[in-house]
Length: 262
Image (cartoon, rainbow, N blue to C red; front, side, top):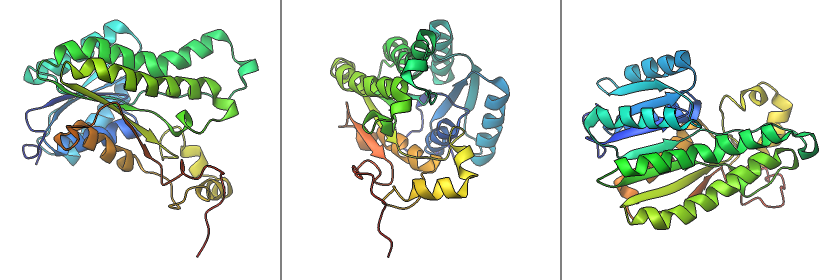
């Protein structure tokens, strides 16, 4: 039941809450007793996620707010609603992000700025306006990406944004420590989500991708959510300014060699 667990009495906000990783992260927080507010741009998707979470975690408090994570007014409104659930705010989880496959020489300035906004301005806003509300301290967890370490030439704006996010996490962790707020990141590898679902319907391309993952399988949203839950909880009370790769060993496979078959 949602009442039990080490996060009982804690309030959390999850941006990108209707996405696969966002919803899975919210579920883990709910299962350990936290009250959760999901934020996302699409009301219908949020309502579906809310219904699924209420069914999966009976008795869990999960609310929704439709808004844009790169707009200050929307972020402040979502934070206020999350705080109002229990009169406090303890956990912020940012799962917003993404980028298009495109040559830099064919990318317009507006698209470049939009990618930066989506992946790092969204986190800045959450930190800037969320931390002052975390009066008893707390934890912030940001979803980064494997491309922050292993670049892709057709994802340069996305790579740059996620690389900047990881530097932001390290730098701001020093300031936030004075407020008893920890901030960390999770760096997923190839994971099943809305952005990768098409590849799962292409057996040959999928097989080639999995060959580059030492553990031999794609990630599931629950794999990422487990790391989010760890970093959000008391078990990680002495961890800040870090980013954890959850990628089946893909980041270690620096040369990109296919894994050996038994």
